[in-house]
Image 1 (tube, rainbow, N blue to C red):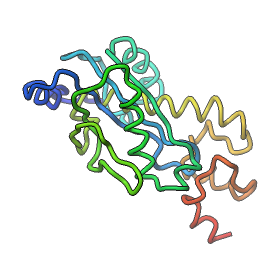
Image 2 (cartoon, rainbow, N blue to C red; image 1 turned 120 degrees about the vertical axis):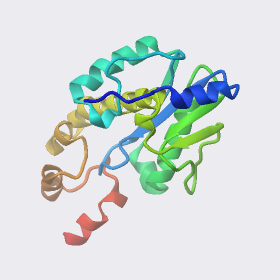
Image 3 (cartoon, one colour; image 1 turned 90 degrees about the vertical axis):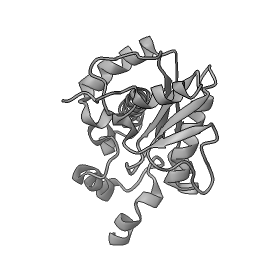
Length: 210
């Protein structure tokens, strides 16, 4: 695995522009068929270098778990928020992602001067990022604070799915697939039908085939 190059370039640009506090923001769980979408916001001390940190999707579960502890140990501030499946269905996944990210920013004990947002979207139909911000495509490979947020969001969601939802609905084996549309997950849906944690707006094609 190659660690990201110049991980503080984006933060340095914002510090040079006069921003004193910068947070990175990312989300996890936009694609699964069930459960909440999570977001995290992280403020790291300037020029902190967390060994092994990278986009959470490029890390193993074991690496993410180890990094989670390192991140919260060194972060100046961090926050995690989530939007439940029912609200995703009532609005849309983009709005839910934006709301979760703004909630994560709002949950920080320190108000950031500027937020670095992973991706190219900052608003949906019913929610938007209201903190001064910059969207970064591929931000989890360009910003250490976004990469840190990606790890916190991913680990937090995986823990909730594995430790809470898997025990609540053991027949779906959520801990194994984390809610993604795998063959196993669809097989369990075929056998048991959806549960209250399923995002019904994500199951329209499956329902059409029944």
